[in-house]
Image (cartoon, rainbow, N blue to C red; front, side):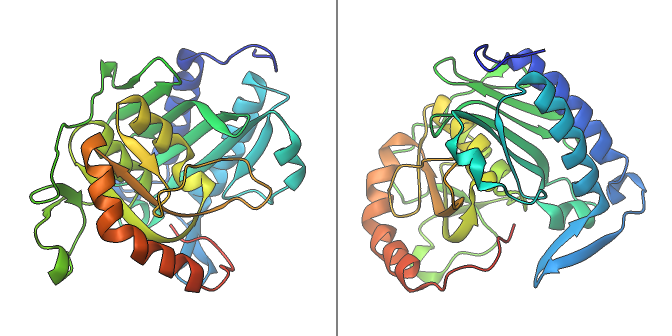
Length: 275
């Protein structure tokens, strides 16, 4: 069992994540299972799998770091957690749409945040047989193999996981897009994509784990406006993500940063968070 002063090891977190992934697979329609789901807000579905995995993680991660706070998409938020030095930030199933459709573009996302910054992170994508791990200052891995982002240095031809590109951005190259934003950012970490950009309000649980994995693989990761992330805030919302190969971040901000700022300023205060 961990303690508040002892760092949880990647191996301890990996074991919990594998069990969480196995639990999620018991509900996944892609394996022939039936799962109950409903809308918790417009265009934002949740399933019994999300809640079951959330309950398991709350218990198991609490055993690893019993004095850490808790922030999860599927748990009512107690903002007192923002006063704690450490906090677990969890999305039990990131990419619920793909999960419910029986597609493999979803994962379990967990990060341990300390003083506002992720220090340990994991993504478990059991339908893909993938486990992503990162520890601050020690690099990132996929199934035990060290990760390194690409060295792409120009926007023309840069690979982006997206379904359709606007006419103005067709100098970019499309690659397959999983529903999970965490997996899209992880693709940058693995050199499978060169850039991910989203320009909408989201939540800390969408990106806390993936941000550490990508940055430990050498990528540059910020909010869509270029601002650095800080996690475990009293109001855990964030505006988009810009995760890129290092040389692309500046050119990407030059092209899209102004637009992102305008959208962030004009967007209505979100009433919920959409995966």
